[in-house]
Image (cartoon, rainbow, N blue to C red; front, side, top):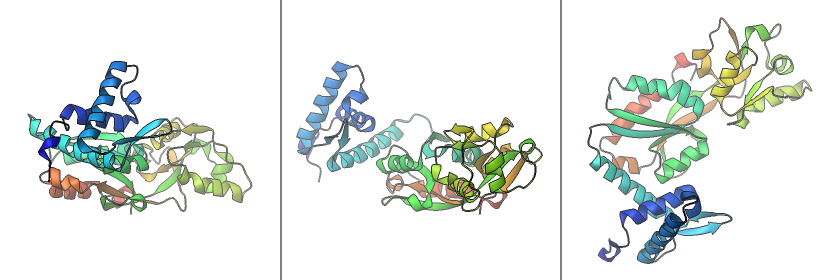
Length: 301
């Protein structure tokens, strides 16, 4: 049960300072070049530790990370702040934060959310582009409501719903490819823009290069799939992209070459707390899963 003597120690300001330090990886990082604020945050976290009787932060190398008790407190505090935010919300808007890889956001999530406005006009999503590992981390600790990640990477503690299988293919400007339309021919003859956000997906290209004893030397390195797609649109590069990119790469100008072993099963993930703190969460999750499920028309199975 809650000990009333903790009420003074667990002030909102102290909890907020603690969360800032957790998210930033330390007090100095949470308030750079603000010595007075750093001193205040250090004191507030120490007072929280004294009130709870356990250490909340520990140093690992150059960063401060939460202890097991600190992680628990951070989760509880985020849930409390989320609830307070909904109570204080003056409008009837429904805020919702979602995180996914940039290609999913650009080519799938945002267009589907636009369609969802027809049935949920007050839904106000916030989208964030992150790597899968960070998506899962932020959903786990409450910084993000929902995420889309590979189904095989869903960590314990999260619930999920499979959306489908995301396929990939090589997209080449027609002017760059004369002759055989094979992965090996493309690797040997076409300047490629390779994305770096999910390097494992480039493995089939490296395998093709080894089969023909030809080094795979990218002509352009891109941070994300949408950047690689933009490179293809210039007409100077080919790239391995999700088949969702078909929406911006018409067949009249670009050739699509299937790539074996480039299918990724993805899922919508959330923390069970979402059902506790958000009224109507089950209905919302059902609608989102239906709206975001990949369809055959988008070359997803």
